[in-house]
Image (tube, rainbow, N blue to C red; front, side):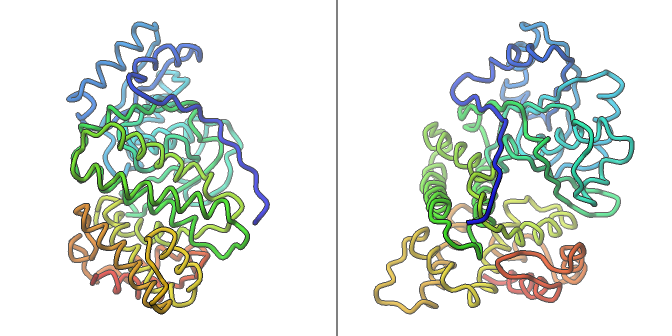
Length: 391
């Protein structure tokens, strides 16, 4: 196990009706709020009215900025920074899923910075200033951004999608009411499941030894996600299943599962290039690239993948060879994605080989390689993209 420091300042307010508490919880900051959200869904479901009423009842002053799109963009972040400066905003309330929360974090990061906030996504440097505080009301359990230090933004001009992380960006509090998820369309549920599972895979598949506790936590969380995803696949109104999924999604990306171990993140790097160019849903891109990555790297890391086969995918290995077990595990994961209606090939996403070289070059352009379980070069990434063309 590696040395680690773990610090998570985010207070979680979990359960039925908790969105009605937001006004009182923001009141203690005694600052003007930026109410940040996406499209019209929070208005259709009545959540917008609940939030506004709670803010008004608590006499909290606020301004609004909606219109955040999936794969949030830098232009909206710039708009938010300008609005916050003009209105002297002191805290941002993100009402939405990972895209809205990531956008809010980027605005918070850029507010007190003299240059372009995109500089941080390129340099990965720690900010010397204190970003604006961010609070959230989660509407889609997926990205885990509600208590993570991470944010991902797309630059429309350069067609790059990059992530950035700093402990200063963890939200001060996040409200998670599983009741709010029952109105989600099926594809958003499925994409969210794929995303949170990938967050665990990126931490689970490691070279680090003597990580029994975090191994077991990763494995248990993956099994619980798959169990409850199958329940939701048949009934999107099951509160208890949503509660389990929401808690798992949070645990998957608040980095509790990753402490003390080397992490990988190759699949996310490869998928970011896919969604930057083709604007595919992040979870859908991950369900395509993850099995291909597994097929490519598993032969060099058999013990790790055998552990995954037995402890996560539940394969009985008493009468099979190790390679057969691993192939069966990857097949079962692929079939699980199919069961949820997720794509598993590039063709299903409308992606051709046209940009494979460009995507591979951009994915590896910082250090020349990505990943830690297996260091992948540009040529390796191209081969994985090609593998992802078939299931």
